[in-house]
Length: 250
Image 1 (cartoon, rainbow, N blue to C red):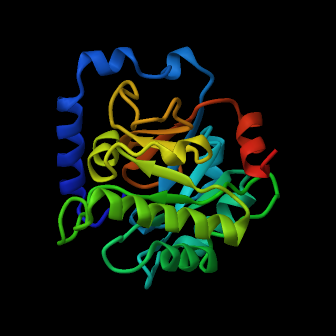
Image 2 (image 1 turned 45 degrees about the vertical axis):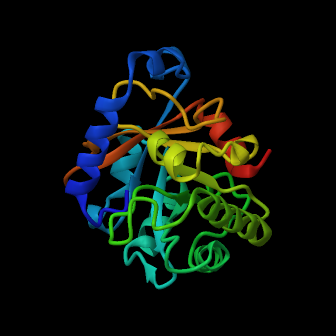
């Protein structure tokens, strides 16, 4: 979702799909055909100028919008996307692309919260998401951190975000990356909604300890009216009323 190297991300996703086993699919949580789902997207500057009224009229109910990366980058389209999506009736949330090898989790959580990732109980603002996935830059797949170091970094981010906003952040990740780079850590899933990345026809196996996915990014090549080119498509695992309940923390 970083969009810094789409070819790398597509190659990684393809590899994850090939490695997923039939047994894993059998224990996965219910897919869209078996559960109430609500359609959404996630966007960044790579989608260019977006007509959010057209997006909403196309049936899109929610959007995660890139806000920040590391401690020095704010997406140049974030402010317009965040305001215009809200005004069009789309339930929106910010997301932060993690760079665990350049600064502390607390530093990056504060940067997110101070640059668009705060929260308000207005029925259209979701808690922000931590996008933590394979490193698209130099420094190794797991950013050069041990599994203990990665757990500590993520926990530092989550604790700081909750202290700043009163909300549990959403966590975007892949099952493979999470299990490898955190050592199959189960700690966050009691409180933090899982946003699963798996470009396939079913969610597949979830990260260790996660009993359900809340959001599922199922393709990177979606087409939506109001957006030029491809866009990531997602589902919320429930109906709009439950999504509003998450937005309002009720």
